[in-house]
Picture 1 (tube, rainbow, N blue to C red):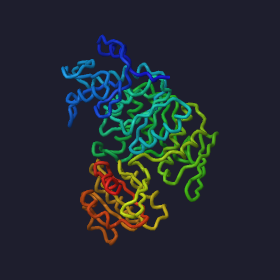
Picture 2 (cartoon, rainbow, N blue to C red):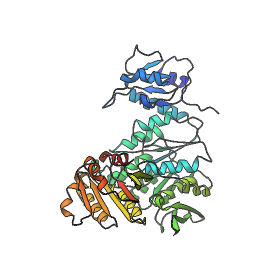
Picture 3 (cartoon, rainbow, N blue to C red):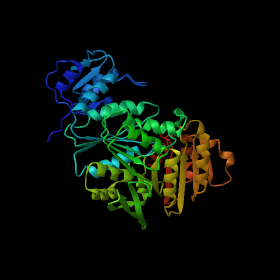
Picture 4 (cartoon, one colour):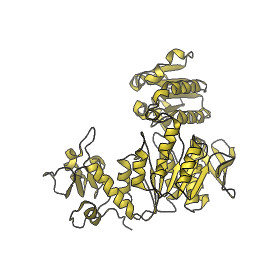
Length: 454
């Protein structure tokens, strides 16, 4: 069956136009990624102005453009608006109001994308699902992905991110999720918040800002859990499902066994159900978030045993993906966490890597950004944790870790002010059959190391 998206009738209602019937396949704000039939929104961005790429958009197959000023260089229909970003949000809100399926919104300080992708993998064989791409989780990405979701979708899965107060509030009013997941509250983007409680309240905007939430799935071990639960009760949310803590949660890991490559896990749900599943050791970092996925299956009234599909998932690029490379005769295994970093995710991923039984292990640890005034404290904490692990070499990258070089007394630990300095010397650390763990904030650009070695 052919997928259906926004129609010309929808556009006429939202923008007061008189378009003839058009076959539309979604939307884009990047002329390079346009698919034939897309609407192209010409956004005035910080670095690029979409109005400069209208010709390219037409050549790539755009069916229609939404612009602030008309162009005589293209032949496809143009809708002129005063603000193209507001037009994007306006159309997404209208299209969302017509949607008949269920929407799941996921937020948290870490793990949103991997949880979203895993949930999509598990549900997609049973339901018509749509999963927002990559980390399209801001005020451009969320409305854009709503427009890229077919109206025949049964379950839409989205993540909501934030850097400031009221960001999730605005996104929730666009997305209007019926099921929401709050994974955790950590010191990420904390430079814009004075406390973890403020971050917890900001995350709670995913349900406090709207009246459509039917089920809240929340980590029982979250910082300021009582505050979030109180907010949920005041919103009269019908179902609150907790996960994590063994003694007090609705969903928790009851038993965990391991062999050479996998963990066998028995999870307990709502004092009645038990489900067993396997995960690979490199998936252990997802262990708690898998419980949130089980909560989603409960909320959707689906067979809990489909959680067994979790073992087929492999981490995505920059989020734990394992890459096997050959570099100048040496075999290299890279555990790629180069997309993002926070104290909590850094600690968990590092401990997981440390359990790998390899002779030649290398840590490449990059700065963690946006930690605010406690940044120095957290970098010292991770520095000490790293030095307590087993490795052949540890390479710290970035000016925050570079400031700690005088605290080091180990001969196999090195510091580099930025990634380019490390790339110049990386070959001196590469040994045959080595495993390299790479993690840091995306802005540190540790992915350049992988590109260099590939």
